[in-house]
Length: 173
Ligand code: IMP
Ligand code: MG
Image 1: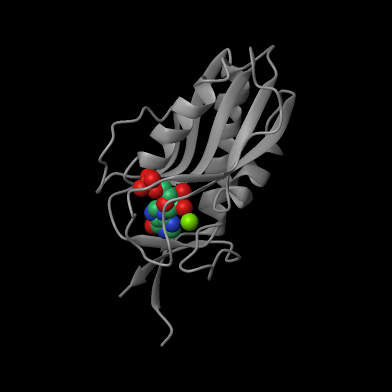
Image 2: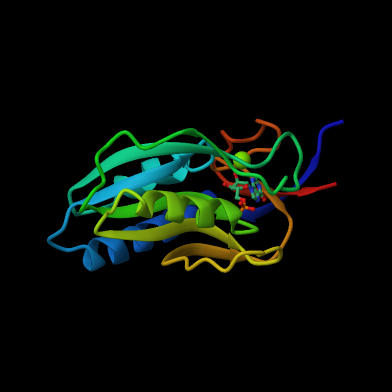
C-alpha cells in the first residue's frame, strides 16, 4: 500500500535555504579551500546543490555509512562501507549530511575523519531532527530543524523510495 505523504518543505524553500547556507559557509571559509564530504546516499542531492552555490574553491568526496536497514528506526550500529579517497590531512573538511537523527552517524564520522588529522572538521546538515538525539554532536550549519516524523524526498528515502522527489514530505504511517 502506498504511504500517505504530507508536504513539509517546498522546492522554493529548500533552494532559498541552500543558498543562504552556502553564503554563510563561503564567508566562514573565505581564503580557504574546502573538502566537502557527502554522506551517501542521502546527502547527494543536498551536496550537489550546496557546492554549486559556494563561492570558495572546494573539492568533493563521499563516504558511505549505513545504520538503517529497510526500517525507519536506527539499528544503532554504524557500518562504513566506503571511506574518503582524498587526502584530508591538514585540510578543512565539511561533512555534508542529509539529516541528523540519533546523532550516531555523525558522531562516528567526525571521530573517524579526525583520525586523519585534518585541520578542521565541521558539520553541515540539511535537516536537524531533534526528537531522537542520543549523542550530542555539534552541527555547525543547519538547514531546517524538524522535531519529529519520518521525512522523504530531496535525497531522503524510505526503503530506497522517494529520493528523487524535489521537495520534502512527511510519511504518515
Ligand atoms: P542517525 O545516525 O540516527 O543520526 O541517522 C542518520 C541517518 O539516518 C541519515 O543519514 C539518514 O540516512 C537516516 N535518517 C534519519 N532520519 C531519517 C528520515 O526522517 N528520513 C530518511 N532517512 C532518515
Ligand atoms: Mg538513509
